[in-house]
Image (cartoon, rainbow, N blue to C red; front, side, top):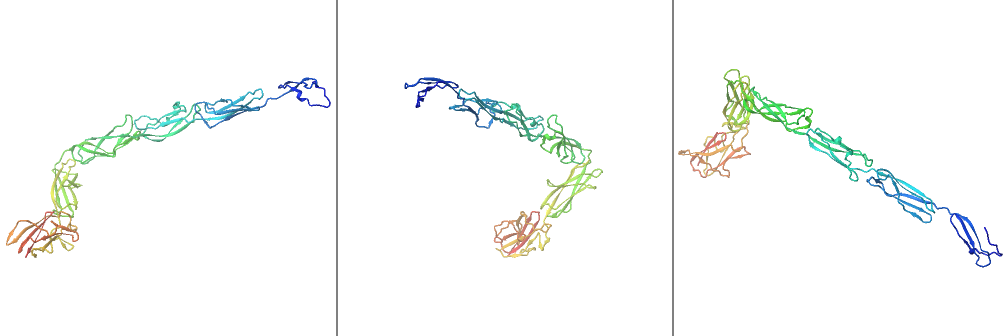
Length: 511
């Protein structure tokens, strides 16, 4: 290196020095005197400037991330360094399409003034949930297997139904299946496995059981035999049975009604059916055996009988030849059955009742026949009346006129006055009867005034009542007779006709 010769005293001549600097090389310098007092000079030095470091940063933005079927690119990159280095290049991705661990990275190679740098970040791509629709079934048993239907689709509407297992929902027999499980098992690695349950229902099939009656020879009973059939599906196995079958009555006849009860089914496939009825009807014949003719008679223990009193009817059935008939006798009041009893060893059956209403009754004893015996019947007219005149209950006479009118007809009243006609009738239990309709009619039957008159006339009341009325306090019937239209000095005979066919006659005179 060559330098200028110093001058004394020293002077600052730096302004005349020119240095040319080059990176990492021999840097030249020159000195050019502008004063004319110094020699020009030149030379070289070796200077060095090292490259600055760079910084690369990868940042994952957002998240969490779920599989979408498309590449997921959430990263950004920054490269910075001295001298104003600032870059935002695109990251490089790996495994960022499917579910799993993806990576975003970037490597900066550096430049003349900066060294290279790199960074990478992992991020998770979670599995997506497939869209799954499972439709349960609600069907009636038909002997076939049934399976729920379903569909599975992915995030891009791709069909994943092949990964949906519905085999656990398959059933054939009737029942409710509230916990039928379906399973989705992903084979792509991009979807979550899942499962669920559905309620599947197979309703029992309606089953109708029909009966066919079996004809029999008369045996005096209502016992019947039938065969059963039904409308089951072909191939199903179970049996039909019944508890009882009976005719409506034991008598001989064609196409007689047979009632079957207690029908049930049992066996391997019975649970698949719902029995519609446990009863049914059919018909069958009861053919006659060799017949012996019978005759029936009927008698009453009391005729007429008093209302409320027990009366016993006895039917006697005799055969034209031995032996004594067997079977039952039904007693009827008109067309209404009263009761049925069995013939005893002497061929008699009885029935007792205290419930017959007032009036006449056509009582029939019907023998329905027995094993080898013909049916027969007979009737009588049973009369039911109130307690007769002379009956006294609690000190009160029944079935007769009561005071103020005397029973012997000797009462005399003032013409124009009101004469109360009163009476009571009793049943066998001493009850005074106030049932509407006790009085059938009330007439002025006869007027005796020198010459007797037998013409019946209407009786006039002094009250709005035009017929006998019931006095619930006194427990008696009453009619207030007006005598204003009746003449003096005559005797008047009246007749009260009751609904049991009896009458209460009475009379009185007017002055």
